[in-house]
Amino acid sequence: MNKKFIFPVTVVFLLILGIFIGMKIQDAVSDDKITSQVRKFNDALEVTSRYYVDDVDSQKLTEDAIKGMLQSLDPHSVYITAEQLKRVNEDFQGSFEGIGVEFDIINDTLTIVSPINGGPSEKLGILAGDKIVEIDGINVVKIARDDVPKKLKGPKGTKVTVTIVRAGMEKPLEFEIIRDQIPIYSVDASFMYDSETGYIKVSRFAAKTYDEFMKAMAEMKSQGMKRVVLDLRSDPGGYLDQAFRIASEFIPAGKKIVYTKSRIKDFNEEYISEGGRYTDIPLVVLVNGGSASASEIVSGAVQDWDRGLIVGENTFGKGLVQRQFDLPDGSAFRVTTARYYTPSGRLIQKPYEGNKYEKIADTDVEGDNLEHKNDIQDSTRPAYKTMGGRTVYGGGGITPDYIVKLDTLTNYSVQMRRLNLFYIYTEKYMSNNRSRIESMYKTVNEFRDNFSVSETMMDELKNLASEKGIALNEYEFEQDSEFIKASIKFQIARDIWGNNGSYAVWVGNDEQFLKAISLFDEAVKLSELKQ
Image 1 (cartoon, rainbow, N blue to C red):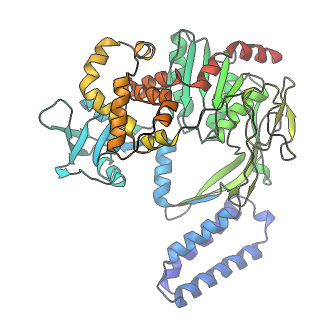
Image 2 (cartoon, rainbow, N blue to C red; image 1 turned 120 degrees about the vertical axis):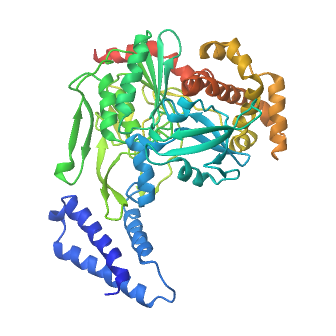
């Protein structure tokens, strides 16, 4: 056999075995049928590789075949290349090895957005706004974004030298950085909004999310937290066990959090709360259209048990569970093996055909939806009852108890965001005003409550936008003025106080959050339905 075929055929063979043997479903499919399909693909690949008019990449053909097979199943059964899998593992295992910075390319220059807390760059005194112009003596002005990790990441203990230009410093600064293990946090922010109200933002459910969550909650409790807003907006999900453990902290022991159903008996599972430290704390959960999977498990359990209120916009609607199977070349694939259901029996998966979702009309009406009379009601959304007797619907995500829609930005603001002008403007502003702001505002709450973006600052931003080719639209600028001011203020707070500071400022102008904190009395009243 031509050597071209040995590796791809092996991959396909192992793929089929991985699906039908590794997933323990060989009892559902004839061995002869599997063998005949492997032979069929082998013949097609071999003939194509031998006789196609041009040279073919047999590995690519095999990968495309795997992708095509999985795409015919559902939107979440996918093939992951070895390179993609490495990045995915970093994101969800919670760490990587490197120098510990968040970066962006601003005006062709590698710019530090923020050093990561506890990382080697922060310990050496590298600051937000610093510009890296050389790496190991090589000029990196105009470096491509994708090339940055290749130069800055590396094994723990190895060294890299960076030359930095810093505002206010006449000469460049040189830092020798010893790479280290860098944590990737999934709890983006946690702080006390006021003397009683805690806020915690979870961006995804990774391997260490529960541990991060519990640490943040304990810190806020020590500061007097008596109620909490859990922000799951734009959280795409992740590990089911992490969602279960977080939900268990709010829901009393013995109550079902989520359960899965599969045609494979071994994949049918129930997750029963073990109880936690926060089963009595008033709770409001924020969600939106980017809240999916594990986020919907948490919000669905809270809603079904009438444990707290859900505020925001309809969630994504992902009720499918995948398992990942690794392949010999370092790639992997994920196959949907079960569906999950909320405690009331809801399957919140929205309709799909193959790998495409069907569009659901957005007819939800803003306001009090505690009885879910505003849910999208059609034949595809069956009705269920919460444990307190309220009607809720399946078949299309979690509909909030209070629907609050955010205003759509104008094209003018969208263009400014696309070009990262809020950051660019703030970086320039802070180079001249940082020490003054730090001396005037000792805490982020003082800054949030007392600092105002001036008309001069707004005019400077307009001028910057014009310089970048964005034609001024006065009507759109005025329409988005509050958002624009909040964005500038957000960036200033992030520069000085990091993520906690920026979120503390942002939620002060966030209509969904402000609605949430007005509803705690209602959340208490609702949770008492089952007490």
